Image 1 (tube, rainbow, N blue to C red):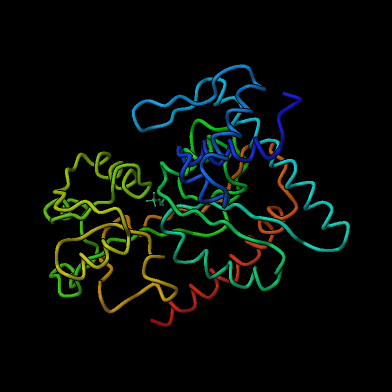
Image 2: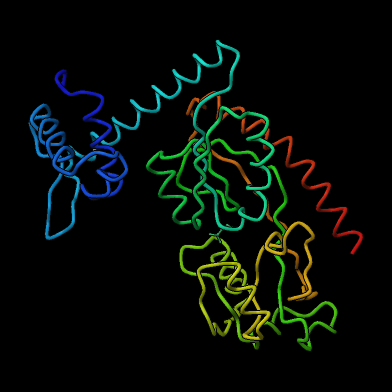
Length: 309
Ligand code: PGA
């Protein structure tokens, strides 16, 4: 391995991430034969195949998977070193890798704006995915920080609850149930329901709630986006349970109504988490502290606007 170069490791990491020589070449602005050559030389240095091609798809061998983990550790250490050097110079510089579940897109980007203004030297990679996608990234140690609402069970993590995440029942604005108070949960079972996709944290919570009460919802439509669900509700296709954050900073909208259902809103929390024992980079730690501070202002604003309505 002493003959392997950092550049070869970088090329390998990009190929492994995309599962494609062509896309790796595009990302790295080099030609595909150069990518192949680098991988060939790295394979020779390791002495075992790293990548297998079956049909058109590329697969990592056991050695390839092990090398990918090593590459990520090496690049993470180098990133941290660079950030430490910037910090010695009195600058906050480097890359923040942040992954969050879909509903957070209603408030995290708003918090990122002022953060970027405060620290212009920090670049951000913000990945939005559903709960299951986020756990995969956590498992592979891809990002610095992860934001979600349901704490993972099989990971040793450090976590901090920073904001409330109330789940509400949404219905079309002219739905007859909007006139009723303290609606029994059973009534929802009779309504056409719009459900998030499998792997969504919101979906698993809704499913658990109905299972606990021995109820079966009539799923009329399954959609992979909160925004699409809101539009489908507004279009009269059915009701759903979503985070109140999907209604924006105001927490209300003229398109859909929040139903007064017993047991709702379900009070959950947003957590910022990272693998236990992982030493956060200077940049990640800066964002972590910022998030906890900013969330307090955000919650106060949210409560103010919803109290006025
Ligand atoms: P989801 O996660 O985007 O996967 O539904 C949201 C949540 O867990 O509250």
